[in-house]
Length: 326
Image (cartoon, rainbow, N blue to C red; front, side, top):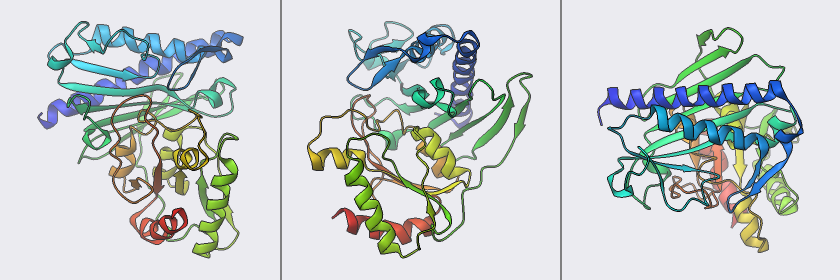
């Protein structure tokens, strides 16, 4: 596909996320306890009331706005119970689709619905390769901030593989957009900076904390390393590419395997589908063994990943992390 067409696809994903953000904002203004109630429990995750609002906005938008000449398969949390693949134009046979679009309408639901912190809408597009389509195939990605009710400004970042990241700060009240340039940290150590292992839930927390402490001891950067548990993979990527965090490791699938746990409270492909944006900003995003992420684009496969703000940190930390995990 030509560069101009890929850029149009990028703008389409941004427009979709604008609609998702606006639908969430409208729900926030209405308020009510329905937003925090459990609406469903799927093979992928727990679905809350606020998620159902965004899911309907996504399906309506694709039906009305997705170009007919680009038949697409939609992969999204909440569609697992569908009779078959969800495609647009509706009813298109899977074999005739040219794209696979994976998205998470709200990544960070729990923090947003309790007004603790922004969530993120995540979306990515890859050429259709059927069940073999994976994270390495993604060509276009977009992520849009879903602010808390009292916050009127949010960021939107998007990119085409090999291109410059488009980053805009949007004022909700007026719609005014201002461009900015993301800048990951250039620090060569994690001392006096934010660096975290994701350990949001009780399952596996002790196992993860033990490995985290072993890594910090092996690095020898001292005790001044700050922890930040941002319960959103998209939010974690944002903190890396904005220079707020230097290192993030989400090893929950490894803890689950080691402890033989059955938890589904893990990162999935739709949570990490915008890694391309951080990579095009200069961050290094890999599997824990240092290899590229190549998980298939579905809603259930667990994904363990590691993010470094820059290549120097990846070289310094990566080998020691792999030694700790061995």
